Length: 396
Image 1 (cartoon, one colour):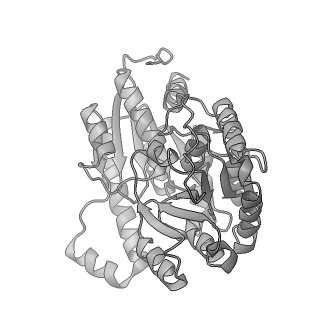
Image 2 (image 1 turned 45 degrees about the vertical axis):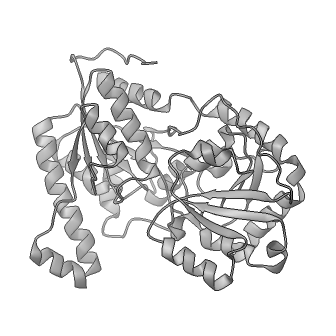
Image 3 (image 1 turned 60 degrees about the vertical axis):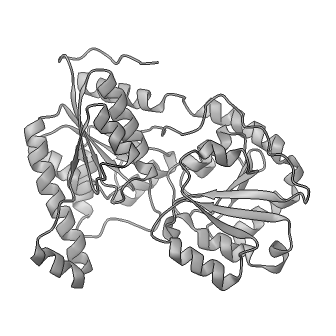
């Protein structure tokens, strides 16, 4: 069902989306992309700028088919730039960002948007793009999908970050934790900040039936997270599962996802001889299919926003065992809809897993309560709601 936004001073608004995600696609792209589609279908003009564009990726193809232009702001580098990049890692980052800023500058100047949405995978990686908007006088909002407790802007970029947040018309976060942490890191209040939700990829109303019991009564956990250990912490989970008492239990864990740390995870599984307990499931587009066969989610994340994997598992009627990172505890209630580990350490994760194992008979009950609470907290139409917010910002 299409929702019509508020009236505008123009027949159609021109809205630009800028994504700083360096991968072909990531979970941090879902909200801006779904909102771009909603706005385009409502008759507005949408232009998107993204690093690392693959026109064959199904999400990019969907944007193009709807009439949203998609500009790559990570263009091919010159021979001299490539040579410098091989020997100077910081130069590589600086060169790519500088090229992206120039492409974005030209694109926004030609488009003349009413509003620019700078979508960040974290809370500072789109600051340079926000500065382009500020310098050109374009109204913009910031959308932050994560915040990291131990990462602050480098001292020579701190003023730039503070200015980007102070100048933004609105600052959106996917978790209150991320919003408060950003204020503390920048030592400034953000009165124009608010929390929004991401869209999800499972049915909103349909509760998945509990998986049929196997003859050997094996419990199956799914770890649904991109293969980036620094954020997602799969190494912590493997350390816990390598202990003798976990090896002896009727438990199997599948790592679903993709990413540059896949080989590292495979090598760690080899080192710890975990082939009987852990397997790599790869990337799965139909996440509902996962929850037809798995009993619970395990998320050992070190850093988070509010992970889609948690929302989708809860909506599907599955409890979660997760580290209290980012906004995890804003949706997951310990001992009620799952089990929270106090910190991203093997010891804390072990404690939460042990409690979960001892209460495994309650998992179906916890899953039903998880679904009920998720439906009460998460809107079914996240993209439409965010689109309405953007149109209201333009209308003033």
